[in-house]
Length: 77
Image (cartoon, rainbow, N blue to C red):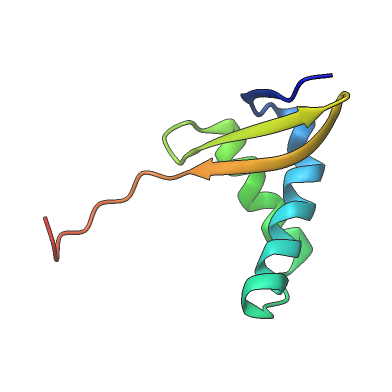
């Protein structure tokens, strides 16, 4: 079965939260508060102005995610 990529939906909230918590620990040894992270993920899923999550599915299971954020640096224009 081929890998399928799609825009994330509210139903992906739980797995995205788990992925973010795991990534923070793996990359920075940072332990995120699960409730705060959960609310942050949900905020993005509910407001495209904050960012957009995409997920990759293999055999019907989400296996990876990508978060694209809009950010502006006034320091660097």
